[in-house]
Length: 109
Length: 119
Image (cartoon, rainbow over all chains, first blue to last red; front, side, top):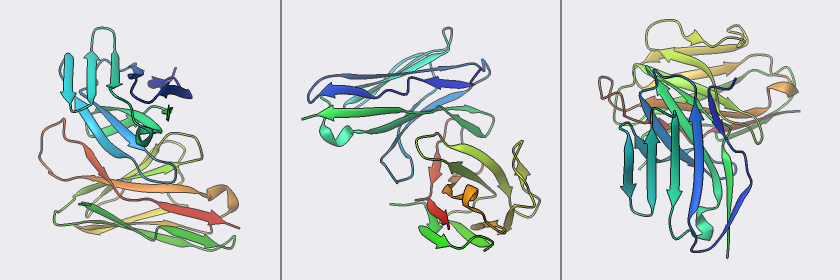
């Protein structure tokens, strides 16, 4: 069983819509959860992190964490074509990060 | 701005060549750096944890004699792919935590990555 699972997609949404990205993890000792965006050929860049149950909002992005269900999600409101990228969920245990396989998002103009 | 610098950004070389990749922390000291490898359309896989002044910790399945890591200073870690072969072609990325004793929720900062192509 993979430690961090994501739907690989591709996920396509029209411009202006809400994109919903999901991630589940297996290690209940996981402490922090991160969402990274990776454009093709580039290294990951941090979008958000969350470590408490509930929602955390930052601009158009909202991260949601449910530790009981071992589930973390990322909502992107008012999606823009520039949001088209692969989104990586990463889970931290200790000082190590474990990444999911990523979800490819395409925002259609 | 960038907090981790990685060089070179791209390497193309012949099979059998050894390739060195540098990872530098900018304006902070990194006692620990991480080296990842990413194959096309795959996720980042941790290869090893580089520890300043001591041996690197390698993940299961990663050959330490193949991927030599040196972390001789608080701002520089190097990864040398020895006698590289086509199957070593990949995207190699390093990262570091900016605050050594920072909170557990602090993110890793990534370098821009090195695209290695072995002919």
